[in-house]
Image (cartoon, rainbow, N blue to C red; front, side, top):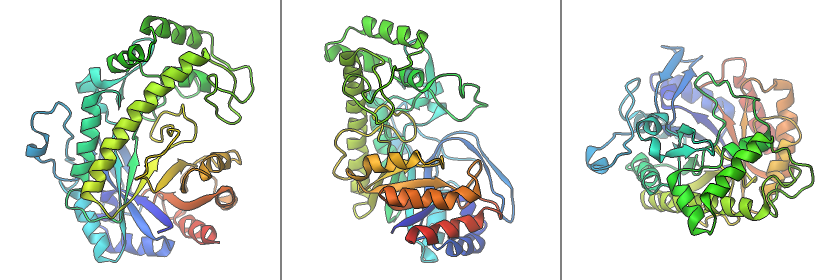
Length: 391
């Protein structure tokens, strides 16, 4: 399967024939269906019975089995705005229509759990918590994500699994009437995305760092603005093409990045084991970013990708030519799945050239966002991009 379109369970339920017809008009190969997803307020512009779904909290769209979660602090919630097994029902409807389904599983992004258990959330160098971000350095978080993946896939025949937020979320969070957009430069966003929770600082100590000195260095760098002087070397040897210059002492930056990458690798190892147990034949796609310092739904990738991963989904929503650099930076290391949106602010006139650049840069797969959210004016773009990507 080369091309998929994303959807929520409520896009399918109550509109089976209409959704199937819209999918078929796209010419895509599969639907990537949200099975575990963060809170959202979603439009349903073409649904026959509604126009909005208010998913007020992160939910597991499969039955939340009490026996599976007994004795744990981190327990997902089922939705009260759709069916208990909404993903299972939607997947069954799609399979009955001959449409392959990929399970879209969001892992460490859960505001309600972060608010209920702040000690397990990401904390920046000023002591401020990000409740939407569960920290992978916490063993409870890794166990939660692995069990969440297992329960999401239990008894759900799927062709593929797409893993989002399989790593650390950072300071940027598009939600809750966000009022931080543009307030921090990219280097400062990186600094404020370095987790300083108890588990992370314990790992710093084990790596030979003094946590007090590291926190002071981070705060000083944030206050100074942390604007890099230029060049191609970030953090003393940990490089991002075109985004360079030292911003922390090289040894400190390298150790902090190593701690983050080790935590993400441990989370991914546990989650991938659960996926392989419950969906042994499914292809696995990991949301990731070639920038090792990236934090968010597509966190920075480790130097060596886990062998179980078949594809990496790279965020390609901006349509400027620079986005193709993300694809080319990764194309030699992994099979790249370019993640493209047809929704505003993407301009329809820019999308064809954008997708062509991504393909030329090395994208071997295409994932389109979003079959349920796109209105009638944007639906034809899905079919156009599918056709043009096939070349």
